[in-house]
Image (cartoon, rainbow, N blue to C red; front, side):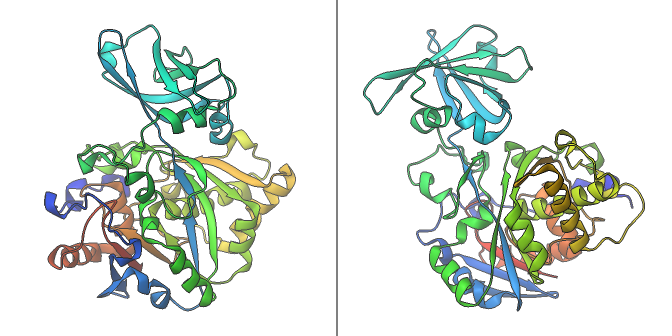
Length: 404
């Protein structure tokens, strides 16, 4: 069967509301850890992770940081308009957009949009200096969902304004408002690069003590960045996967990380599905650059169905990474920046990832398809065991270590 013909109904399971973890545990690494290794399922605690990894492993983690992307504007009529910043448009790079002074444009979702068809929204933002910053929002002509923000006090960046006035977005399936504790618990301890509107939640279980244990065992840890979009929560509403449109996410990788992946001949353990999508996207981008080494920066991308097109080719991990580094040499680039829409589903053959750490995902989701592509039909045994033995599900839930 072709991947595009996969019926999403085959990736459903009953998830009672009470099994969804609504809050994080007081101790991050005290959660349960389901270990799937070669078809065998055992139970552990996340703080035991360092001892459970395969010998000569390296961890790849996503160091993105969740921004306070929700802005609530009040109209004179009393209506509340929520403007949810998804990704920057002008400037298009997160770093530049968040450090903009005076104005910027973002692609946004607008709540209660029928109450804001035109005109200007205003928000009075209290500043640490004691004076208010007046933030203006208008529909921008560059796109249907584009919103232009402007403010006169250029002592503050747009990132500063989000920190002062924005609300940290939490998953909609938690069915609650953001609370003070989420500001800490919904960020990984290694979150650095601002840009996500959802956390890479498998990483939430890690503590500094766990990284110390990994270092003591000689396990390298490599950072990559994928800015997670709100589309990660988008349910598959079509009957088959072929009709589902994947969301676009931006990947940023330092040269040092690619060098480490190339020169460390180890088992690659991806922390979370965002690191999985990053690593596997590298393969397809590298394959494209082997075929067309003169590809320009603005043409770098990984499309949704790219992995399923064309004849099967066997290109080694080292060849892929060397192609990426050669391209960076030609461009004199220290960072590799490109968008991905990769869809990983049954029928996909993993090229970069040998093992993964991940939470338990929603029924009928592309993330569940990604897991199924990794361990096959055993995903049903894994999820059945988790449901029968009291595991907590979704973003604040327990974790799993999957080693085919």
